[in-house]
Amino acid sequence: MTNDKPMNPLEMLAFIISKQIKDHEVIYIGTGIPMVAAILAKKTHAPHITFVYESGGQDPENLEMPWSVGGPMTWRKSPIIMEMAYSFGQAACGMVDKGFLGFAQIDMYGNANTHQIGTEFTNPKVRLTGSGGNNDVASLVDKLVYVGLQDQNKFAKKVDFITSPGWMEGGDSRKKAGLLNDGPCAVITSAGVYDFEPESKRMRIKTLHPGVPAALAQLASGFELLAPEGEIPVTETPSKEIIQILRNEVDPSGIFISMPS
Image (cartoon, rainbow, N blue to C red; front, side, top):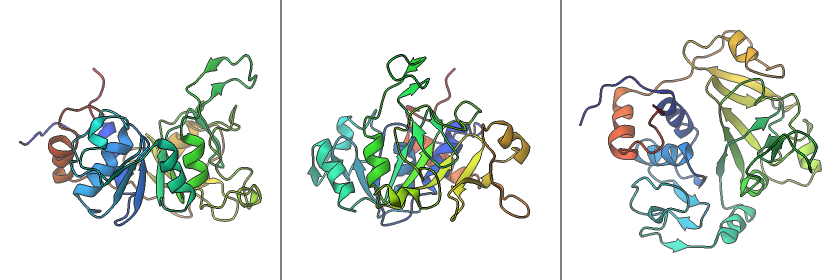
């Protein structure tokens, strides 16, 4: 069935995230748009990836969209189902290539906060969900991709609490802290795609979405964004065929790619 409605921002986000996934990678998947992106990648450019769901399901055969990482579709015809702690152990042993995390705040070095807003631990302004598996994923998977909305509050000069360690204070501080993996490699937001400058480990614009100028991306950030030399590339957009796969095969019920009415 053909659905010719214009692409919405959630579909764009799912597509961009899917392009971060390379064929044959082992992917640690969290609830929401990362699930959409992983299934899209497997149905398009990366058919040989292996799914590791946070709840312990490993690479289910049926790719019907789960309602969360604890949904039964994450276990359907899985070759193995493990407890959550074992799936983190899998990452600790170097057997997970890439993971995806959200954030309430993130700083220029990719340190993320999902604990609280406000620096007073016993009396925060807002108490958030906490770590869940976020610290484990950030500390253990080989490469980390952050996904979220962008504004000055979320792109903070300094996060109120480090739930998920990024490049710490920049440079080689992550390695000195004893974290052995490659750390965050990308941040994908409603404005663009960011990577980290190799030496300083500061966040850098990689591409900006169509219609988003660099000045607007900077305005939506609480810290200075580094930029590449020359013209900033525009983020690739999905083809009509990819959008139809998203709507008809990946998430036909619109669990995660439907915009709130």
